Structure formats: C-alpha cells, structure tokens
Image (cartoon, rainbow, N blue to C red; front, side, top):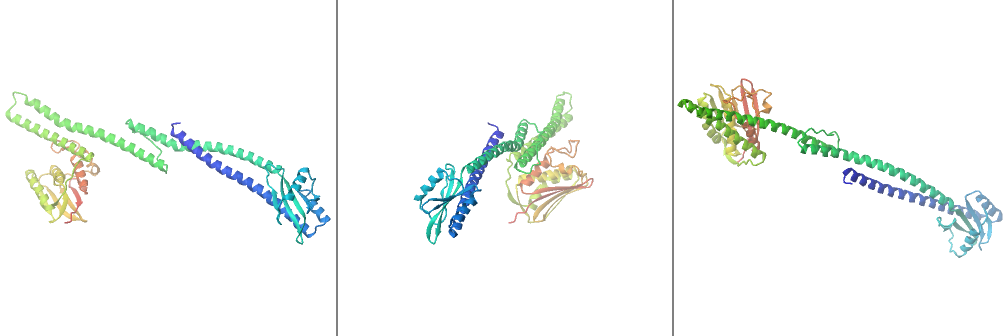
Amino acid sequence: MKKLSYKLGVLFFIFILLIESMLFLFLYFSMISERVQSERNNLIARGMSHRDVLEKNFDSLTIKHVALMESEAETMVVITDDQFVLLEASDDVTEEIEHFISKSKILDLTLQGELIESRWRTEPYLTTISPIIIDNRLNGYVFMFLKTQPIRDMIQNLTMQFFIVGAIAVVISIVTTIFLSKFITGPLIQMKIATEKLSKGKSDVILDTFREDELGDLSRSIQKLSNDLKRLKKERSEFLSSISHELRTPLTYIKGYADVLKRPSLALKEKEDYISIIQEETENVTNLVNDLFDLAKMDRNEFLIKKEVVECCEYFQEIITIFKPAYEEKNVMLNFSCVPKIFVNIDRTRFGQVVHNFLDNALKYSPSNSNVQLKVQMENQQVRIRISDEGEGIPKTDLPRIWDRLYRVDKSRSRTTGGSGLGLTIAKEIIERHGGSVHVESTISKCTIFSIYIPLERL
C-alpha cells in the first residue's frame, strides 16, 4: 500500500463511498417518510370527507352509502354512534378492530380528524378518527383503517432496489476510482522514471506536454529541464574539448621550443627568439586560465562588481592613452569623441576590461591605414559607447554566436589573432551586471560596430 496509485485509489473510493452513502440514506429515508406521510394524510382526508357527508345526512341510508363507497377500496371505514357502538362497516370487523375501537373511548378527541395509530412498523393498521358533530352535539365517529402490511412490503421492495442500485454504484465507483488513480498517477510515474533517467545522466526523456493542467505544467518543466541538461551536456563536452585544444596548442609550443633550447649548438639569437615565443605562449595560457577563473566566479555569483561614479570623457581618455602606442605601431588611427559631463556608475577595473577587449579586437582585425573610433554619447536616456572599426567584418551567421564561450569566427585559431575565445563572453556578462546591454552590427569587408548601453548616472 506504499504506492501512490493505491493510496489515491483508496482515498477516492472512501470519499466517493461516503458521498454515495449519505445521498442514498438521505434519499431512502426521505422516500419512506414521504410515502408514509402521504398514506397518513390521505387516510385523514378520506375520513374527514366521509364525516362531512354524514354531518349533512346522518341516517341509515347515508351511512350504508358511505360504507359501500369504501368496500372496494384498500381502506376500511367503520361508523359508530357517540357511545362507540358499531353502526356500519365497509368490511368485516375483526377482533383487533373492535378492540381498538373500544380503546378509543379514553381518547381526548378534537373536532377535526386525527391519526390515532401511526406505528406502521409494528401495528396491523393505520387508524384515524373523525367525530360527527351535528348542531354542536356529538352524534358518532368515523374510523378509517389502512393495513400496514402493503406499506411494509413497499418499503422492503424499495430497500431491495436501493441495495441493488447501491451495489451497482459501488462497482462503478471502484472502476472510476481505478481510472482516476491511473489517470493521475500515470503521468507522475512517467515523470518519476524520467527524473531517475536524468539523475543517471540520460537526457533522452519524452513526456506528455500537451495536457493543460498542473500535471502538464510539471511535464513541460521536466521536459525543459531534460532539454537544458542535454544542451548543457553538449556545451560542456564542446567546452572541455575547446579548452583542451586551447591549452594543448600553447603547451605544445612551450614544450617544443623548450626541447629545442636544450640543443648545445643553438645560436644565441635563436635562443632569444625561442624564449620570446615561450614567454608569449605562457602569457596566453595565463590569460586563458584567468578568463576561466572569471567565468567560474560568474557561474557561482562570486564575480564582484564594485561601482563608483566616473566621468566618461576622463575615464575613456585614460584607456585611449594606454592603447595609442599599439595602434600607432600597426598604423591604425584610434579616434575618440565624447560628450562632456556624462557620468556613469561602474566598476572601473571590470568595465575597463570590457573596453580593453573591444579595442584589442578592433586592433587585431583592422588593416593598416584604417580607422577605429570610440564614441561616447547620450541616446534614449542612456549612455551609448560605440566602438567601430574598418576591418573584415563578421558573417551574419556568426553574429548570434560570438557571445558563446570559446566560439571563434576565425576557425583557424591563428596565433596572431587567436585570443582565448572567452573575452566577449566575459565582456557581455560584465555589461549586464552593470544593468546594461551590448549589440553588434557588421558588414563583411567594411566594418563592425559594437554598441554598449549603460544607465546614465544623474547627479
């Protein structure tokens, strides 16, 4: 009895059985009470009707006529004088009837007809008495008798019918209970199996997501979880594969050139070149590891943003000053324009990391004698930081994925334009943690424009 379907089934069955029992009992006793009360009222009404006739003509002919009227009915009429002496009856008067009439002498009767024997379960007759009053003087009585055996037979038949209907109702209730318990627990069992599969790392879960109820909502949530886990598993596999490749490449260079440095016949100039390559690749590995640490902190919500209010022109001018030599070395013009007195609330270090990434990418992908522009302006009550270059551009098919971890437009992963493939991912995360957003537009062989939007700080 530990299964939910059994528990729900028993609960449903008890609940339905209680409701049916209450309804059946209420209906059963209501029908019995109504039928018996109807017989009593009819008996009183017939007795008073005969009494009214006799009060108009209390003679032997009328008395016989009243008795004759009841001779073919299920009821029996007995007419007596004021001393309870029998005058006429519609049927044979038994000792029981005579005994009952004699006992009526001690009754305190009203002028209206009344029921003087109502115990239909134990007595042979229901009995009413109606006094005959003529000119304010008692002249006699009209007794009406109705056998109670037919009432008991009727109630017995009714009881049997209720038992049959009740048995059918119980069978239907059992079938309904089984159906309802299966209908409810069936999807739950499927979800249980699905969650067990998910806990074992299996993501091939298919559930009924078309139900428009709470179970349907739960199915859709589990199905979405399954799809998300499947996607995350795939992304994790691709991520680990990409990380392995990213680490293997510089480590291969480092190991290879380190082995070369062991050669005794190596010239000093060659040694310096190889050492320079080893330092460069070591820096690449260090940058990659640092980026991975940043991503790990972001995933654990441990990536802290310490904001302060800065003036945009002064802040971005400091960054431009740092990048100027690198741009001049490649003969790329770095232009800067800024609307003065614009303030933002940012983490100077973290946001500087974002701008560094965009300016560094612009330099890498810009040919000599081209222009890169950094422009800061107001737009729709926000600060827009626009970084544009005249480089080779990004294909439209790649634009939505440039924010993905380790995704590169340059599939060759060359050492000159390589990078870790994590910079844009981290940059986007930092911008969003500042309450901002970033958008990119690009035209092949013409330009790429990155637009950063962050809230304006009003002083």
